[in-house]
Length: 390
Image (tube, rainbow, N blue to C red; front, side, top):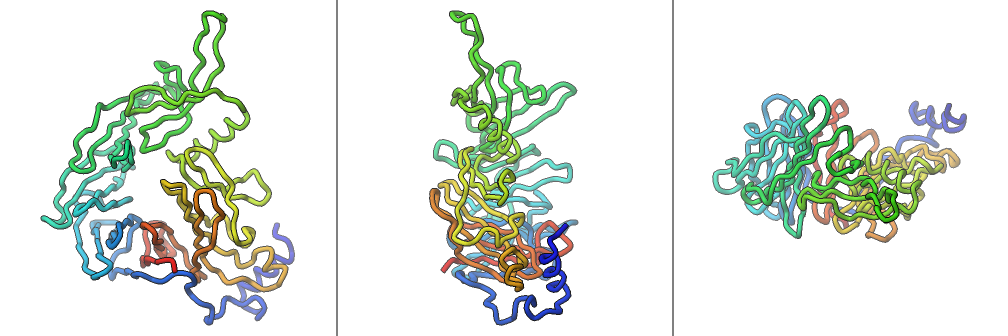
């Protein structure tokens, strides 16, 4: 049950009957700390969630749920736009990456399988240079300093699941190195004596527990340890002992829930005030903020940990947070954008007045973007705005 004072404030805000807790006034600045680079809308369909960019270009998708999926690439300095029909490749693009005068697009089929294609943007726009057959996951990764496409296929039988992984060239789709696989019963590889807990790098790395080897001299088995199966190398690497079993189990549980990532943001539910953790290479650190974290609806958190460890995240102000309740005055419902250096404090960089709106947040280079959601849909939205920090 809500505390009486908080419930009363909520009621007054909803009813709009108290000047002390009225909705944010129109005089509040709608945008602070950033400038609008471009705002994109569409007269038909919706702007989908697949967004990308590189320097002066910004890519987005206009789609509907039946027959339309168009890739739009805007040159920001000239506002010139290239439009490519993706319907023959996918009706539900989930990611787009610009590759010179081409774009690599990943989509998802109705059965949940992913498909991919590299399409031309300049010469015969929309022509597919190559396509990737349906797979469980298709991901662009960086391996040995080069961008590759990781293709993961999981095939289940009555007793086990076979995981096959291959690397493809992003330029022409040719295979780089051999395809490798492991067979798991549950999460256990009998051949490797290895129990998989989580994955990363487009499922090219599987992390888990390697059973200890038998020590003939001591006539006993060595303790189990952590290890990584590298599909590209085809062997177990990074073997290490477990010093703190309790810490290892907590860390592995969080990583198992991270959907194939080791760099991500997570709410720490084990603390009274839910700290926000930035996980980098599978290890967490608690973020410190230059604003009171209790002012935000922490469940609204969206964000990313970059390859360099820098963090971007968006948090929505809770208009009836504890401080607002104490003041008996609702706070304006801003969406605040934070950025943190790899080992630094999260600094609020910008805020957007967002009362009554829902957004999807993302980054494109040193800029950030927001898709304003339609109230009745969880996919895409009615507008896409790109912002530059001041």
